[in-house]
Image (cartoon, rainbow, N blue to C red; front, top):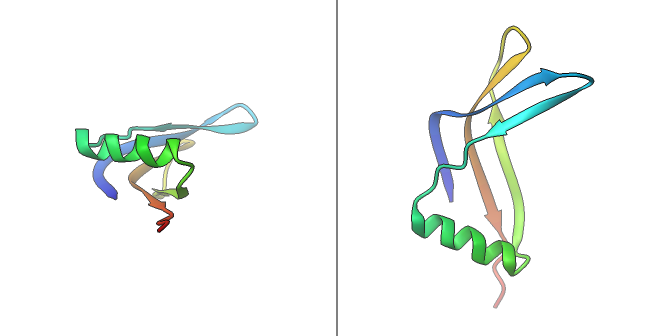
Length: 71
């Protein structure tokens, strides 16, 4: 599952640590799958792409997740 769109979120300077605002815009079936994998403890990796920024803000243009397949 991977979602790409021009405005997936923003990372910005906020005190000593940066803050992250990430918009997980997914379809209803994708949301159901995400919840099922989360409840089963099968999230393997969650990642997002931070682009070059300016003025202490960095745009995020994509995010994705990987899950563990168990048989």
